[in-house]
Length: 184
Image 1 (tube, rainbow, N blue to C red):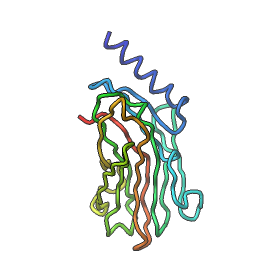
Image 2: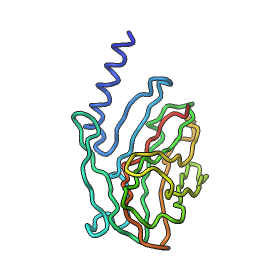
Image 3: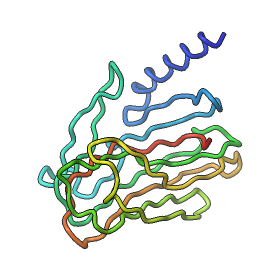
Image 4: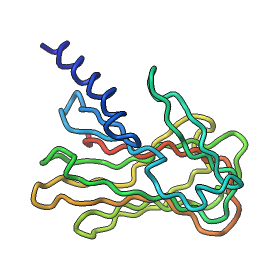
C-alpha cells in the first residue's frame, strides 16, 4: 500500500509540472500536506527582463524537467516578489514559506542585510532582515520568510518578497524560488 501511494505521489509531482508551469506540487510524506515550489519565473523581478541586469539560465530540477532560475548580474535596487493562493494548501496545517537561493563565488554587494517579507491574507505582515554575506557560496540554501496556519475560513492570497535597498551594486545571487510546505 505504501509503495503504491509513493508511486502515486511521484506521478503527481511529474504531472504537476504540466499543470503548474511555474510551480511544482507534491504531497509531504510525513504530514500528507500539500506542498508547492513557486519557481523564479512566477515572480515579478525588478529589471528582470533587462539582460544587462539578470540572466535566466535553465537548470535540471528532476531527471526530465528543467526550470529557469534568476541569476543577478548587477543591480542597485533588488526586488523579487510573488503571490500564492492558500486555498491550494491543506487546511488545519501550519505552513512555512522558504526562499531557495545561492550566492556565487564571485559575488559582491551583500554587506548589508536583505529584507524578507510575508504578507498573510488577513493583512498581517512578517518581516525580517538577514545577511547573505556569510551564507555558503555556490550551493543552494534556504531562508525562512515566515509561517502561518491555513484556516478554511481565512484562506486567500499570501504575498512574499525579497528586497534590498540602493546602498550599493549587487552581483552573484541565483534565485530558484520559494517553497511553501508544512512546518515540521
